[in-house]
Length: 90
Image (cartoon, helix red, strand yellow):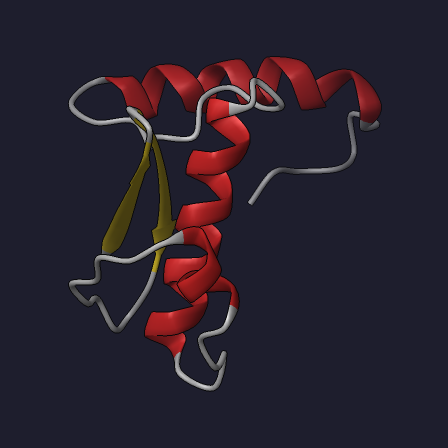
């Protein structure tokens, strides 16, 4: 499952096995205990949204529909030159 955070109109996502609903400030996110998977995913999604807002990163929302297949092909094209022909992607 994916959790999504929104910060000032920008979004970030993170995978988790424990989704949750949460609304709070950046300061409150900073102080949550990271014992549970849900809280760790919330932190990662919040960081992704915040970094996106600050223009430090791009593409913090996961692909959907036909886009995962297109993204996968692009990733192979990017990584392939760094591997020998005997190595395989799994």
